[in-house]
Length: 356
Image (tube, rainbow, N blue to C red):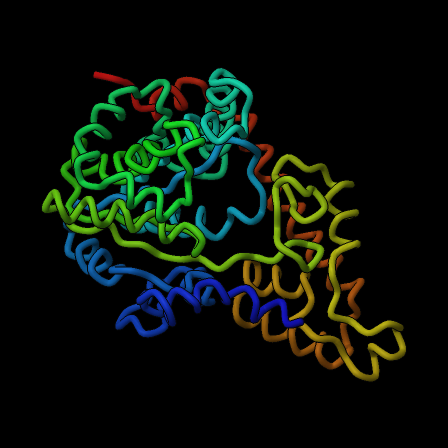
């Protein structure tokens, strides 16, 4: 098993079978580590979006989140990418916190629970670093105008398309069938509110089919198709798929230091069975969770090259790499938790879209 190669498998399939474009073939790659390190792997029309952005045309990012859990380290790629564009280009970021989808899919027991989760996540996202003056949270129970916009765009698709893409059956509740149109309303909302000409939607490769509905609807309404970037899936700490429902696979931004160190010290290793064997043969950094996370998310090129060289040669032990990883994660999480305490209610209120 090569964990690092598996990270890109879904995005590679989008390129090979479904016509996505590799980011490495772009004429110009943004100076953001997620692009430079291949964490943003493939795209649809990102080149058009980026060119428009550099020319000063009205652009926006739409980047949704399902409020059924809490933030974890797997969100870092998309969040950092969005922050790069917001800080460098001043671009507004619209964040749908899809509490209605969470309810109709049965991930929460009530709409009230979904709403409270959405408000909690909005506060956490401001603590992460998003600019309250350029960030807009879409919570559909609050911004109910979104449903009128969804009605407008509903004539751009049909039930056969939704059933084919999502696999819904007639026994499913009708909220599931209508939600793809609500999602389209989220994605195209900046064209209504700020007259955005170009929109970027950063997603994981598993969401590509869903967003293609929005691209088709946009075209029918004579709007530019929203651009898409696909980020790779970070492996879970256990070497398997990361899952919020399996706490041992992820570092949550609410975890304390003791929990973080315990998870990391138990994480999947690319080292040898004994210290003496490791020093002699070296480890496999492409199969070591701590090496992958450090080199991809935290270290610059020089630090990453040294880490990989020292680990491959056996100079650096697995326990030492895990210690370095734990130090970086704890520093990152502590900074977030301190920022969370400082988020003011008035700043949060200003960011939540409300009906006019």
